[in-house]
Length: 109
Length: 199
Image (cartoon, rainbow over all chains, first blue to last red; front, side):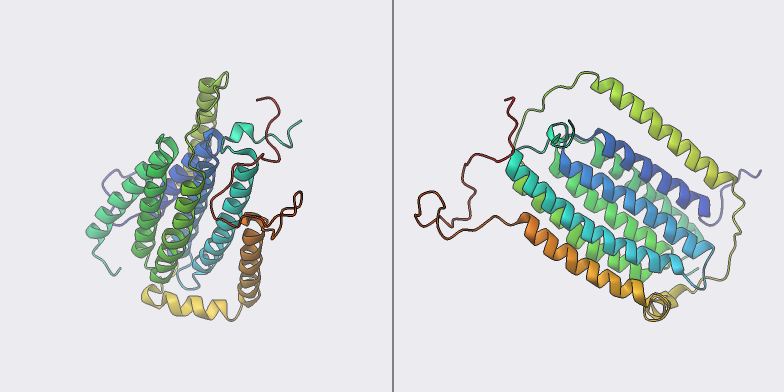
């Protein structure tokens, strides 16, 4: 195992960065009380997945770049998800007058 | 490589530091407005990473869609629902945070182990570099044509769904009294439909 500094960015560096971003997003998704922050955490997780796809597309699939095409579709779906999610949040806020995730318990009991 | 490798290394280090610290800030900062602006910074840094990977079209799409649309949408949502409210204390919140932190750390360790022990077949084929946009166009209009068209249908559905969900019911006359209803833009204080009975 060689320990000298790599001359180019290795694939593993991108994967590690995406892992950091994804785990931060998961933690935020579980622990946020504010519903808007939950949506932000979902966007962080989607970005982590996109970084993975782009890194694989560049390092392992350089000719066909299917990962980049897939990333574009993920960005499209993320935009649609953000619009619908925030609309649901607005209508929920109008009806319950709070954004606290702990009080969105209509379907709980 | 279009950029010298040492410059590339420095750029990657700076951008990944911004992404990691910004993501932590998005999750941990108490003021949600700061979180939203930091989220924009994270999106911009991710676009910079895409530029390092020679994917200029996806970087432009990232800036346009995420920074220009999603982040602005989130800021608008914050402006609409940003009421100062005292969150009720939950028993065992610290323990819950600690446990979920441990779960996330375990997931992180697992992902790192997968990333560093898998024998990736690098270096793969020679990257197309600046021709990436042409290749994406070819893909979108040949073998990915059906998903491309479905994406447009999905966006239309999301647009109509968001309008239907977020609009207020506008009535020309009050149902109870028969008087003309006020069409003002400011939300009236009225009894919410689903407010909790307990408080």
